[in-house]
Every structure is written in structure tokens, then in C-alpha cells.
Length: 243
Image (cartoon, rainbow, N blue to C red; front, top):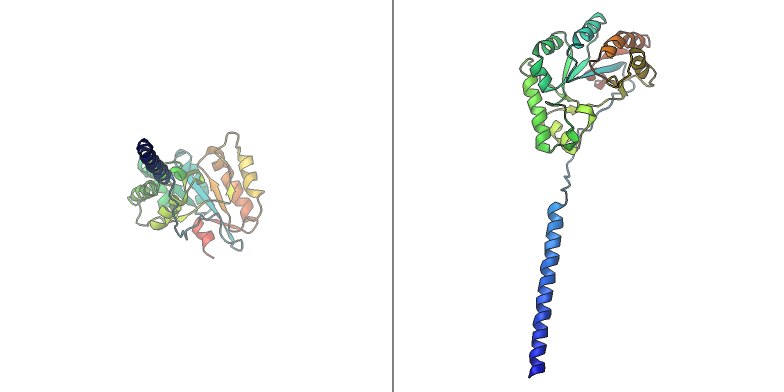
């Protein structure tokens, strides 16, 4: 009788152990599933654009603006003298802070693109956060123009899948660059900025990135002159995308 009871107890203990193991394994699997990042399968047609066609006679100049408003009037003067229209990618917060300068850019016929509302790392933002930044920038821009921007340049060229999704859903093409002046870097003199642009190959259809920096304003007329001597037309992003 004692042996029978021990066997029953043993069987019960085994059953309890199995139940505990099953519960523990199930908990581990559930926790792993709950912390595993969700992969979004989204058919993104709006791939980032770095340049236009190499058969295009245009080369696009872009100026990303979140600061440097004191330099922009000098750049606008040069562009007006050269009869050149470029693309200004502006942040919403900059437009809000300097509406008069922004209005002048519009009045002089330059193309306006979005640089998001704040100069953040968009590659770390969620879909909703990316959409919020782009939409708020658009709302600010549209206070001064009736033309909805359709070009978006993520700050520092940083983006993730959600950035591309947000831009596409809101009707934007995501724009990067093929030639970087790196004019924000300390030691970037006028001559060095000119060299970084002119010594690059395949200028046709290229997109040049610059910022409103004092040395950039000095380099601007030289770069335009040298490119025009190569029978290139300096224009905006839409110019190099239309082929």
C-alpha cells in the first residue's frame, strides 16, 4: 500500500513539474514575441532621390535652412545677379522664427521644399512622429505660399522606413544629394567649397547640398560661373528631375 501511494505521489509530482515547465516555456516565448521588433512590410515606391538623369543639362543647388538667416540675403543677391533659381529646404521652426526672410525667398522665385519642422534625427522617429514633423512644417510653409511643397529633405540625410512612408503618404519625394559641399565643417573655406563641387565628376543631373554659411555665399558665384562654363545650367531639384 505504501508503494502504491508513493507511485501516485511520484506521478503527481511529475505532472506538476511538467505543468510548471510548460507554463515557464510559454511565458518565455510570449515575452520574446512581445519584445521582438515588428517588421513592417510596406511597398515603398518613394525611394530617396540622390540625383537626376546624367543626360540632364541641369545641376541642382539645394540650401538646407534651419539657421544662417543672416547669410541668406547675401546668397539671394548672388542668385539674383546670376538669374539662378535653386531649392531652399526649410524647417518649419525656422519659417516661424524668420517669416520675412522666408517671404523674400518665395518672392524671388526659388523652389521651396520641406526640411521637417525640427532638425532632428528622423531615422529614430516612429511613423506618426515622422508624419507630425513633415505635416507641421507644411502647415507653417503654407502660411506664406499657396503652393504645397512636394519635396522633402530629411535633416542630415537621416531617415528610416517610417520616414519614407510618412513622406510618401503626405505627397512628398524624399531628396538627398550626390555632391556635398560639407560647408558646415570647421575649416571649410570658399576655395575648399568650390573645389568640393567643381572637382566632382558627372555634374549633369547632380544635386548639390549647401547651407547658408558665410564661406558658401562667397563660393556661390564662382561655382555658378565655372559650371556655366561647362555648358551646365544651375537650377532647382525639379529641373534635374524633369527629363
